[in-house]
Image 1 (cartoon, rainbow, N blue to C red):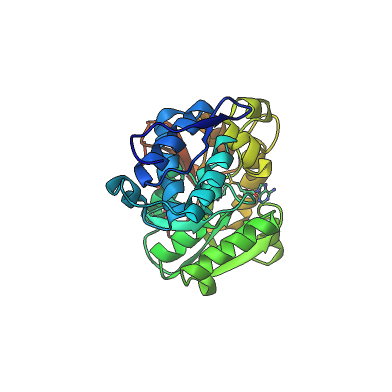
Image 2 (cartoon, rainbow, N blue to C red):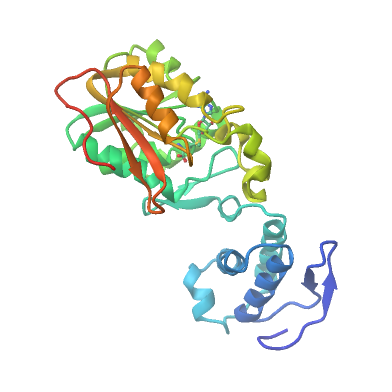
Length: 320
Ligand SMILES: C[S@@+](CC[C@H](N)C(=O)[O-])C[C@H]1O[C@@H](n2cnc3c(N)ncnc32)[C@H](O)[C@@H]1O
């Protein structure tokens, strides 16, 4: 089948249709993929973007090529790869897992079902950390590193920093190490498996860190059923929810962070919608001073920070 021609189709159980014959050109393959995903309930913009990325992967060409070159031939092997990817996307598997990578802070990171897919809003946490700490030599921690997106980005953006990256998931840490290796920062990141601050305190880092940074799980368990299928069915629940209220991880890691920080150090935490006040109160109760909240591009309070014991680095500044 070629661009613009009607194609015979087979209905699937969901009512979406598979073409009986193979489209011979990229434009027609793209139209079919998009229509199939929409019939599976994927939002139109998302269906278009997914079909483009998955066809590009199947054809082994850059993403823009499939739109710019609708007459590009689609081989039988490429078509077979594309159909498999589209069928999986139709079952709501996230594109990032299908491709095995996603973008964070302008770089590509490997992701697997063992890791959360890093979100654009988490780039604010990185921006705040970079702005607060300058570029002097220091040691910082990324608690719950997942794919290592934050830890690796900090190491790349600040060549004089040493980063301690922790996670309770050995499988996630394996992916994080791969990402560090890919960007050549393995020697400046140390990895610890365990519960929040515990492995760092056990390793003797108490009172020595310039910053503790974390994007912990913060979705209330009661809200899990309301999440998009892509998230609820495919992303690791240990990365999404810490318990019933969504605040449990903060309650665990804030007291430990207070023990890890050097005088003048900062604690910087990503928070979920509506959690900034509770997390700020928690920081204050554990002795953090000059607490601040930073809003993301959607004006949602997204990062909460506070200074530990007074010291040479001073208290956090900026934010809203
Ligand atoms: C929201 S994800 C953040 C991942 C990554 N930092 C990012 O921003 O994309 C939270 C991470 O915390 C980890 N985690 C959950 N509970 C933990 C615990 N008790 N101790 C250490 N890490 C934990 C999860 O495995 C997951 O990788």
